[in-house]
Length: 490
Image (cartoon, rainbow, N blue to C red; front, side, top):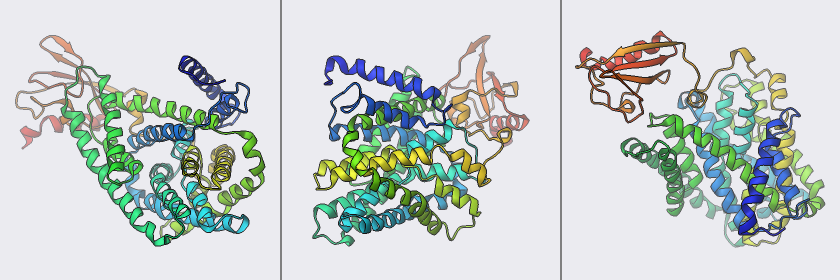
């Protein structure tokens, strides 16, 4: 079947519908949904049952980049700075030095067991050197896996921030494969430029985005998520245009925004949560369509050998060496080593050699595809088991709730209180978003002049307003009263 304008929406929507329905029941059988999305794409592809003809690496790469924007941005929005700050150093070391060590270790192994050149071997190692954000976020959250000692924030921070490093290494070694007369030292300026400009761009665009979101007045609540999407793509493309790492920029931008008070933050978070799942499905379906199983089969043996080495040797070596100067229990180190999930990101990165037209591009793509599939199947299905074996899992009854999950889940509060705003209160003539109420307190209604006003982040508080609050505890009420009485106290 050839995709045309007339049938692409029908075929696409049917595949999307099937993916959602199959994914809903997949965990009853212990199979990660991401693998099922990929399998559905393969069954619908050129070698599959439906026989959709799709052989366009450039389009697949574009879809992959757009999807990764949403996945990384959503992961950044869900990152709570309070939980990340204590493990920031460990996460950053894993996402930089850990990625480099994985690429070098695996690349060296590939060089000795294949006929690849050293640069081709390092290119393959670089492509699969990062843990996959889509795989880690979706599997940890869909399994509702609670882990001890800030372990989950460490894993999510690493997976969300290590793709930029792998991206830079992939581009660098691809350049060396194409231009073999260049020195390996020539990639250092590229690395520094990408990471420094990416970090600066992400922070600056995060600050700018916060100002724009909170100051602009849009007539409809539904436009705010659209505004954030526009800011997300501007952050990525503008940073990339000046030579910075766009993936790093959008992740840092999202982490910053996720920890600020934003107008209609609940709506924004819910939309991006849904969009991240949609993009994961679209990404894996697209990559499934791009794959020709008949072309991968000859490389199953070498692919399995490389995958096993990556899982059991390269990943543990990189983790233990990266964390050797940090105090951490052995079980936690082993678990971080095991959660080295490879998913869609390496397959997207593997399209770069295809588009560059290097000699072994098809072989690299086939091996990378097999590594990603085997990683999600082997490691993704055993995360809960290994968490129990290594004693790093929390019992169900003490699982904590992430701060941003409160926005998404609409969790009920334990009490309701009414507070009247006095004329000399700090809150008078200020927007709700500017009051910075504690996250455990929500204004659900405002009584004003005998009428009820539905509050939003841009709603201006007036004297004699009665705020109807939903609270978690008495401490939250005390914090609210302190904020309202600031002018009186001063």
